[in-house]
Amino acid sequence: MATAENLVRKQIMLSTDNIEKLDKLSKQRGTSAAEIVRLSIESYDPDSADIEENELLELVSERLKEAIKETASTRRRLNKALKKLESQETK
Image (cartoon, rainbow, N blue to C red):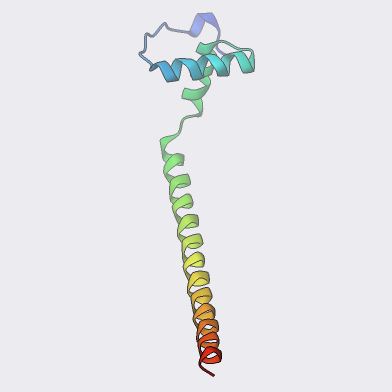
């Protein structure tokens, strides 16, 4: 936790939504809004966000491929069933 001796005042501009979220988080955690901001800055790592984003994209890609295969399989089974029904109707 930061101490008053090593802190520097910095004025920043935030949206109303950010202020509301910051106030909500500080109340939930029982700490100051400034501490939430400090913790957020300390935990921010744009390089790891890229890695997580790439991992997420790979996961989505894999799931999409699986869904396409399952859809194709289902369509084949449906077409087979429809042909069978059509042949029964013509008899």
